[in-house]
Length: 397
Image (cartoon, rainbow, N blue to C red; front, side):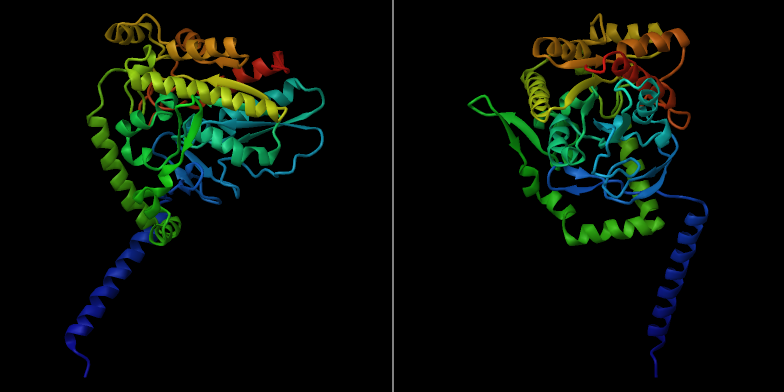
């Protein structure tokens, strides 16, 4: 005779599973998704998993598709067709651009504009995006070596986010910002012989190894299919995000992931080292690109405070930091370019003039906050147009 307690247990489990099934169906009908757009990577620490797609509504609103090669882009053949000039985009979250639809990204606009002005004669322009959120110059260099060259590009465009890329290149500074992220990424450092050396010790980190193990990979697989898991992860992420926001300063530029110190000359030895490594990586990237007979263009992007449309807001922020310009990082990289034969385009000064003249926000979204965060569609469009103008006017860089 079947034990009544066992029957009750089976009924309880069945009821629980039925309830979960109803919630899962409800989430799907409601169109809810909160995908995991990242997975472990033995070279760059993390990258996009292939063939993942979902809505992204946390900042902006866009349906995101990661292609079969793990790129936030449409499908691209590794074989370059005749009469095609390829441009590869390296960058972080601004290039990844999860906040806007693909057709509204700066690199899509760039491709469209270049195919109109035709700076390379009859050659068709194909732009391929390799951007991944939170990447620093070290990861972008490694991506160039291990992924980009497979597509045989003619031009490498590095979208450099001055607000955090320099910090990203310092293991010390990045660890202070987010030790979990820092423990899962490679860095470069100068050894005693004054050589840039790769530090990929993250592969030995227990946290990274757990995420690269069977249990976590199984969770990732389930996460792609179960909206309930996505909902639980969203709740956890939202709580963490709010906790970080509470520690944030109320100043206009102060955003999660950005550093006010970037608008100043190096404030200590750690920032000096971060700048030294960043500049060394840019030159190493330049040399490797030249050795492949390709062209290299560094494009410095903008932070929200740099291009805030209200001058009084910018001036208040500058007074707090006791500075007379918001373009220290942009000017420093431009000066490096002049010294070292490196083509550099600074977008922020032009963005500032445009935003002030039009009195519009180029950063931020209605569902977050206008004037803070990533580029919105207007920011992406302007960036694509400005980069295209540069290449149309100077096809030989």
